[in-house]
Length: 492
Image 1 (cartoon, one colour):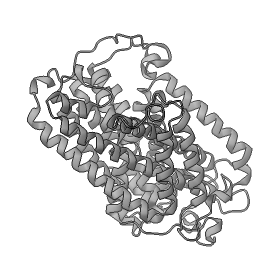
Image 2 (cartoon, rainbow, N blue to C red):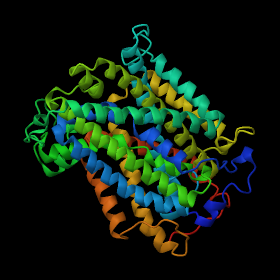
Image 3 (cartoon, rainbow, N blue to C red):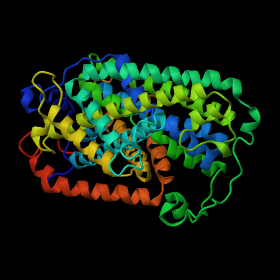
């Protein structure tokens, strides 16, 4: 049994064309470049900009959190350039999962798909709990016994997941409309924060830009220290360049999800042109907003006094702009809402692609006869996210979203040179520049940021992968379309 068998690109592009909708046919093409950018911005601008800015600045990087956002953005940009080439050449559902299947083999594709399921399910559940907490803080009428982290069962998180799950179930067009509206609101508020907050910036708060390195006040050894420090035998430290790098690994969570754009390739009207625009446009807009907001916040408030839970709204309150703080809190809810919706849409498309290939039960790839959406896998996705959001306090697991994304980015970066060698004849409307240096540098930087995450995060990630191997060898390897006679190409 060849676990590294690959699907030919021709077969991937033809997949679903000969299948009726009830057996996992093709999705409907209804999206343009601005819609793709809206989905990308909708998932990227959320938890990161409204919460992680405070955590990273106060505990790791100080004002240099701006540099951390730049570093994380550069890594994301390099990965996006690799995504853009593969997405324009292989515009189908599944994103990194599909690219891995076409280049390095089925078992690696399964690992990536399983990894992305973790990323988007966990990310949506974390954000749903944050949404419920914001709602509880905005209104005294909302009971904290049912909404927020103190609730035994977070009913608010479950409700928002079910409502947005219904929107995703009805159709990509309806999801597009709601996402576009929410994105306009939160982008305007981010611009408001930068423009208004700039009048209250005190440049003295930016000095020193990179605070001197020091040992953390609390013990961070053992499983809580970054992997590279444990391997190198370096004493744990915060601030300095080590703190900037640690903050970059943390705020990388802010950029996770832009690859959701690549998952919509099968629903894009002109994917060869529109997917690169959607991917690169998303990162350009989000990077500018992230750096601008972090600059304003650390300029308005000394980094030692930045609030970790709601850094933007609390900074505005500190200068007497309470009305602005309320507006920002409402925008945060809009931002978190769009993140949950795009997470649900993306996770269902990944599951749809895996089920259509037989690695998951084929019934999960059935399309709704009226709406043309993968309704079965969407329902399963919503149920999983709702359970996680209701019962599991996921704050300590947020780093797992970053490690899963970085792992996927590294694989996509390596897939570009592999596919250039195995399918030199493939039409590539967009080509990654500075080839082959850029894809290699992208993969190396992804691994470097992964090394800045805690050992316990690595252990949890490995446990999830072991569970994935059990599912693959127990079901997927025997049930895939390749095993049942589908076309595959022997690994070269």
